[in-house]
Image (cartoon, rainbow, N blue to C red; front, side, top):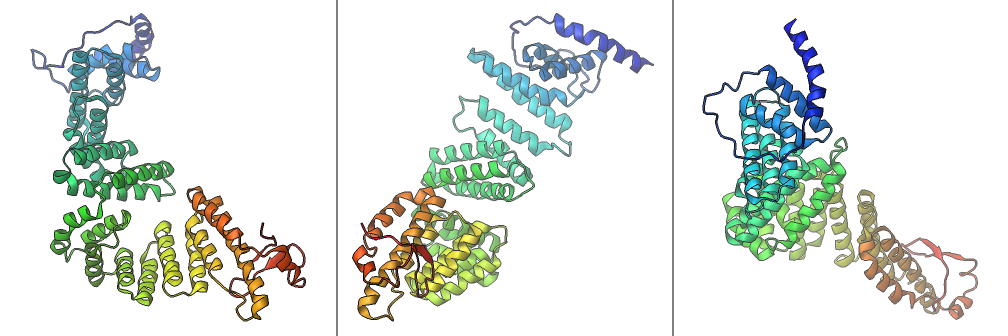
Length: 467
């Protein structure tokens, strides 16, 4: 009966109280403990009424009206409802952004940090939003509002804990802020923070990859964009310098000689930033592969074989890397097929097998302009009519430049980043097309508008004369 009466009273009072509220400038002071000890677990009717006011005001984005009832429940009955904290972040964030008074702003930011501490105290056992989740939110807001703290070390620790505990459940905003803070720490003292920064990057990369590769995660596409930005930040930071990586990881390869996971992380970093010619990288790969072969260690051993001139062994290692790579890691598989194609082209001079592996690479990553560029170079480097009489072969062999240019055009159509290189190749090789006079000398071969280039190439193309 009492509960029913209370609800009825609230239904009558709440609308009138909201309407009666006047927007006014409140005096903001740091929250202090009341003179008399208050039992924060007691929830009064006034608390319930204020919680309702907070909820309704925030739902309508009337944060000015919500502040006083929020402050009241925060000070007197912080256990009343989780909405005190979920809506409190919105209310205080709004007020911080509105104020231009530095002292008032500092007091509000302090109050916001206190709010997160109380949420941990009273609602930290929430299975959906546990302590580490709250620390992540606290770290994000600290970064947003504590502008006078350039390094933001407190936020670094909170965000690191959040990401380590939450993993792929981390908010992307938390990862973005952690990347920002970690990068700034490294820049402030490269010698002190280099190893830490590399470790942070590794963790962020793992988490973002997990989110991006999860087709059921609605944030997958955004995670790909964030990862791209994090990668770019890392590479441009200067820590990605191969010499620096060697200094940091040379002792660690020996220290973790029996730790497959750590060796894998070391190899990942070297490979990601393009330091795969490093002896430290080779050492990590060889050591790891003996312990437990992985896609990363196999690729590392393949790279080491190339440097030693053991090209057939290099192909075997890259093929092993592909077998050991999870099917969802399509970019890595595409990279390995591309490396096999490169070995067949550059070192073993087996053009058909090179093209075969380029096509496999494109199956896993269709937008690779580099594959079409290499395919065009393969065609331009061939003599498919070497078995013909010299005079005839001299003309027919020029048809290879038609299909080569076709591939260069395809390269820039799927990958705008290679446009400049593709255009240069198109201009260079178009000059070697058969002339009208040469095609006139072989009327049986150049009938119609299309032509199929012979030999191992076997591709059809449009007939056109050199200009």
